[in-house]
Length: 229
Image 1 (cartoon, helix red, strand yellow):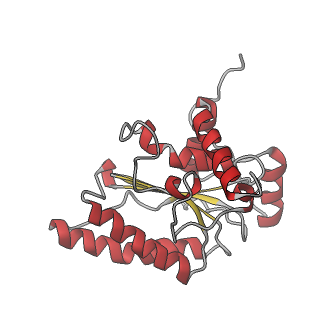
Image 2 (image 1 turned 90 degrees about the vertical axis):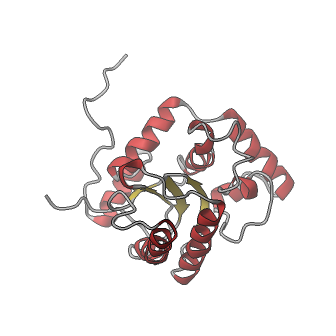
């Protein structure tokens, strides 16, 4: 069966997810997280892929970025993979596959889904039971986007910058968004999108993607369709 195509549009945000093989851990010590971020930064700079939000969990990573073309994201992920996998195997005396197949990627409608996707990514440690709030989890962009701490890996997206003119107000508004959270329905929609590789957004957005790429985007919902209430 041919692989489902990944959908990219130059400059549009993409939610990338990569998980450990069989849900195994890909990070054990703090050094593992740091070397991954170092190589991710190198890859993002080399292939000019701005990263707006990210989180590293023990067995998976989430990245929200805006690739300049359809090849840039893949090359960035290959760049860090060619470095991190040998590092991991050498450090822990492992062999074989580290990641669960190809990384997942979902094109994101910036008008309706960019900020919910940011919140989804940066609150992952809370849903995973790793932290009571996103702030204490060191390996995410929350500390930059909500607390204003420097992070060379993060490039603010225009939708984030539109929250407020001043940095202080912007941080306050984003903190409020995170505190309010996103609904279970939004979480399911985001997860269905990245798990199936389907763009997430309004019908208008999806039609625009189909028109520009000359491809059908399909449906994100897996399994049986939901019954109307």
